[in-house]
Amino acid sequence: MKFIDEAKIEVIAGDGGNGVASFCREKFRPFGGPDGGDGGKGGSIWAIADRNINTLVDYRFSKLHKARNGENGRGADCYGKGADDITLRMPVGTLVIDHESGESIADLTEHGQVVLLAKGGEGGWGNIHFKSSTNRAPRQKTEGKEGERRELRLELKVLADVGLLGMPNAGKSTFITAVSNARPKIADYPFTTLHPNLGVVRVSHEKSFVIADIPGLIEGAAEGAGLGIQFLRHLQRTRLLLHIVDLAPFDNVDPVKEAKAIVKELKKYDQSLFDKPRWLVLNKLDMVPEDERHKRVKDFVKRFGWKGPLFEISALTREGCEALVVEIYNYLAIQRQQEDRAEETQMVEEARGIASIDPDDPRFKAIE
Image (cartoon, rainbow, N blue to C red; front, side):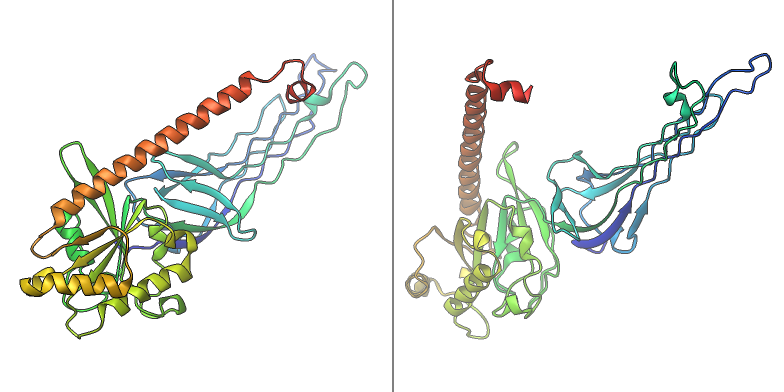
């Protein structure tokens, strides 16, 4: 299946049916009174997150989604039938944006999450609602309301704990194959990876995390060189970035220059992504003679000016990969604990704020 991570669609909810002005015409009931029913509700359009879908290809060509209108009311107290709602299934990680205003409508981050995209119009009232002791033959009725109409932009951002960053042919696909269940295409030429790949890394039976591999970047990617930066959005939800560097390039290109180019393109794209925790992973040590490894690594770190976490691996032989995976899991576990504590603290503070409200406070009464 082709990987599609962007789409533009139009959603049109159904209009509500009109109410009707009608009067009872039964035999032996000459003054039966008003019996006009209400119109039915128009169909709404909903989005639901589905973890069994991993692409927006269904919305690349199916761009218009329109719900039916509600039926009009009828006499004899007959109400119009409401139209069925439409549910659009989207991948987990889909961001729904209003195309006209640029406002974010929904961020589908959990399986089964349901969001209203366009609300159907309410049905109009029949004249049965307008009868009174002084108005026994009302001819008033109301028309159904129009359903909402929107143009939406869908952007898929894959959900992963760790994202791989690096030049084409740095060994990212080999690494994700070595440590996870992902099986991306691997070849000895650049841009083998053409779309993001997700893999589950299992540290033990009950310990795992998700890793994402995106197409490689080159210098000038922000201006559209290579495959550009269109896939960098898939790293925005990650907790940790692994900057993988080819320490033994075939074409004798300076790896320090390439690594600095990646960092530069990352900063051009998004400062928040640039500020994410980032570890440096020097790959393809199997291509470097053992007596030169330490010297080459030391020279790279000095010229690159790196002061963060550093790992030396060979994705092909899996040397150093197991230790790196364990370190990643331990880091993510600490991050999750800190997030849980922060969430608990926020809940406690909110509870204290509610408990400290004085019932006699005018602001509290205004809320009531």
